[in-house]
Structures are given as structure tokens and as C-alpha cells.
Image (cartoon, rainbow over all chains, first blue to last red):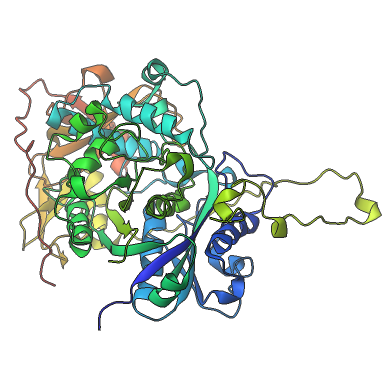
Length: 387
Length: 199
């Protein structure tokens, strides 16, 4: 007996913003969950279990928030499970939620990821001193900057490729009403001229700090068949992790990333990755990660990812592999939700429900997330038809 | 599709069920709503370094850098955490490393960081591969303008004055260029997949 075929029938997102002072943490989550149930044409009582994910508790200082959030999510008396895999958590949470249906443990699962960065200080929380090492890193940007520099040196990529990615994603964010940043008049020159923060990463090549939550409703095959609204079928899910500190580690394209991609594409029966995938929602918190992940995920050969960016292949307008039509993490970053947003936006694409950011006729889409020191990975592929 | 499908509605409008009006008692009429309160928390940790890091930190007080070698893979880790991630095994040999190496890659921070007000931007942090080590070691590149730092540049440790030495990695103030020829970096090509080890 194979796995139960699993369908996404509801996606709910909050408006992403620097500070959602109009709602508490619980109110923020309830908004996304409610919208997902509304799209799914389900009520709280239809949900068998809630799978919730967020980044470290240290950010908001609320320990085990899933316990206090159970009431707001209609989970009293039901199983609730917390997932935590650093920045990739939104993706991992969706994978775990899918596994609950695939394994026939539950028939209808509500899954949700969130962060309220206005109530936290992520840079502080990510720069804790360790007694055995020198405390010199400035948050995530300080960590990823040397890896990006390494990619630039290895491939000889032109210096402004990262700016091209940032400008593309911020333009595409204008098509997404939920996106945090709507910079209507942002020019490429302004991206290039923005200040260097963690050289070679500029201010405009960096993700914002956002409040927000994203939820999905996943159901079994019979429920997916019976649903008269749009449906996205899960064609594959994969998670991998590795140590970020072993000899010979390829920090630009970690082995765990490549193996995770191999697994998820194999599950979906995809051979020619670039030709068979219609849209990618990729975790790109710093612009250069788009060409880096294009290579690591096998959409481009080694050293060629930046050429895809340069040629416009990853733009919604005219590209053959549109990446981050939603504006991506570069335009909205509620950390614990950011991975789930990627997975949910991939689902919206194959549902044909992505509004102005829709890729025409998208049949198969990929959601991707990474976290920690580029060491935790979660990916899924969803399709408009059954696997 | 019918007009009342969710995607046909304003996606940003607050769900009606979540925005029901709340009636306030008269005593609170006109009161300014509290949107957030700041409640600082503090945590102090007692850190137990374990055997490998204890040896490493004690050696630091003598201006020596100790790594540990994995018997299965031969890889040398510094700072040593007592384990070899790929082998999933304890490291089995203490190795004294030179306080010289080369820059694997680096970052130039141009914004101040809260925790190190003493570090004036721009400053250069780098992964230093010590001679004989298999992994990078985080430190500052000093006594050189950040713009002059190169991947492959040879560097040596600059230690605190002897009377200020502690059992701490902070004994290394930073890394300065040795003036030797740059390390030739040969791993531009993909290093090759590392297969999961047998448990």
C-alpha cells in the first residue's frame, strides 16, 4: 500500500508588514488560519490536527508558543505538533503536515508557520557569544557573506548579478498584495547604489524583517477529489540536514541540498528539471542565493546559475523558469513563515490562484526552504494533476 | 467560478468573523489602546565545555591552538567539539596546530554590531584555515585595510599580551598577513558528493 495522495485545498496568508501592531501573536496566526479554512471551505471542527512551525523561541522570547496558541488555532483537544528547523522551518512544517495525511494518521490537517519580528530582535538572537570562538559575526548577513564571496570567485560571476535578482524580486512583489515591501519606484541603479552592509551584500540585496503568518489545509485523496475549489496535489516532499562544519564541505552547494533535491525530483518523476518545472518559490534571503540555488537544485549546471539570472530566465515576465513570482523572501521575511510561504505560493501557482503573479498554465511548481548555516533543507513539488 | 470564492474577494480585508466589534465598558471609553509593552529578559548560563573544549581553552592560555583528529576520516577540527560530524564518532587524537593559515573566505561588515561596540566598521571577519586543520576558524583580519584582504591570503595569529591571557579564544586578537605567497586554492570545482556514512 503506497502513501495516501495528499491535496492542498486552502492557503491563507496575512499581509506581511514590518509591524502588525493591530494583532497579538495569536491574532496574527488566527487570521492566516481562518483564511486558509475559508479557501478550503472547511471549519475549525473539520481539522484533525494542527502542525505549527516557527524559528527559535529566543526571537520573541515566548517559550513553547505552540502551547499558548492551541486555543487560537482551534486545537484544544486535538493533536498539535511543533516543528523547528531554523529558517527552513516553514518548509519542514509543511512536509511534516503532508506526512500526517500521506501516512493516513489524519485526513485533514491545518499547518501554519509564523514570526512576529516586530516583537523580537533576530540579529541579537543570532549573534550569541560562544566561549570557544571569537564573537565577530553580525547576524545572518555576516555568516552568508563569505559563502557568497566564495561563489563569486568560483564562477567569475559579474558583480551586479545579485542586484539583478533583488530588483527582479522587488518588482515581482508589486504583483503580490501580501508582500511586505512594495517599492513602486525602485530602480536598478538604486539597488546598486544602496549601502554595503556585509560586503558583498548590499542593503537592497537583503531581506526585510516582517511580521506574518501563512497557513495551509491539507487533505486526503477522497477529500481532494470531492473539493470543488482549486486543488494542488503533493508530488514529493523531502528534508535533509548536515553539519555546517566538516572538512571538504561545499558551503556554496551543500551535499544535503543536492541530495534533498535529487530525492524530491525523483519522487515527482522529474528528469529535466528546468523544462518540467513551471515555477519555483526559492528561499533567497540574500540575492546571490538565487544563482547559487539554481545550481545546487540542478536547474543550471555548476557555474551557470548567474547566466540564467542575467538572461532573464528567472523573471515572471518572459522567463522560462520564473523564480519567486511572489517577491520571495527578499520582499517578505516573517522567518518562521518564510518557508511555508514558498510552499504555499507554489501551491497557489498550480491551483491557478496566484492572481497577478500567476505563471500562465503552471502545472508543476517547487517550494524550497533552507536554514541554519545553509544546512537544513526542505522541498516539495506540487502539481495541478494527481501524482 | 462563483463570485463568492475567496480569491474573488479582497484578499487583505479582515475576515468578518475576526473583526467583530467589541463593546468597552464606559470607564474605558476614550482610553488609549496599549499596542505593545517591552519586557526585557536576561539569562545567565553556566557553560560546561566538555573534555575537548576544556583542553582547547586551557591551551589557549599558553598561546597554543589545539585541534582534534578523527580516526576514521583523518579530518582535524578546531575548535574541537569532540566529535567528527561525518563519521558520527568521537575524535581520537589531540593535535597542536600552528598559529598560521590562510583566508578561506571573508566578510567586510560595514554596520556596527550590538555585541561588539569595540569593533569599528568597516572590519573584516574571515574563515581562517589553520595549517593542518580541515575546517575554517572564525576570526578578524587586522593590521590591513579590509579592501586589501584576499581569499587565499596567508595570515598569522596576533595574540594578546602575555599578562592578559585567559582560557579563552579571545586571546587571539586577530590575524595579520604574513607576506608569504597566497595559498593556491584548488577546490573551485565541486568537491564531490559526500555520501552518508554507515551508522
